Image 1 (tube, rainbow, N blue to C red):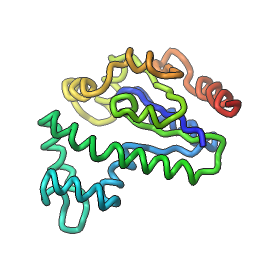
Image 2: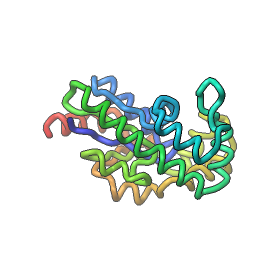
Image 3: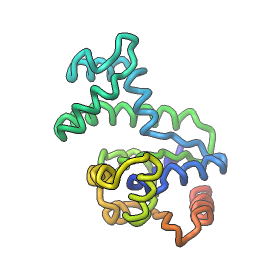
Length: 194
């Protein structure tokens, strides 16, 4: 099964692009959402998280204490790296198992941190969705009802957009200057022909 990765910085529109592929009948794996589920469902992973962060990482009913974890990892880059070293391999395994169960010409894996986590080694091609920084900031401020500084802080945790464009096999421009759907349709034709 061919796996096409979609990534892009916060506010770039990568989820919107993934949803367009889904409308074309292409199965989409949303890595960030899956990771949240895996942190509860995968008992080996949950055990590693508890072992490192303590029992308070989970509520008594087994659900993840997101605020507890977030307070730790967003205050300490080393702790974030440790959490990622637990979660990302489990998410990659889950996406590969999911892809093997699909019946489609190809599948999409949408992930914010494709290059940052080495996930790109587990896909056949990578699309990055690009939008200028000012537009991305405005979108996220409106979407998340947050302030500019908070958005910029989140952006700085991600790989620079110029680097993502150089590393990607394809770029979709979601800059309000070019139409997105024709770009997706063109790539869909390309992937069907692979």
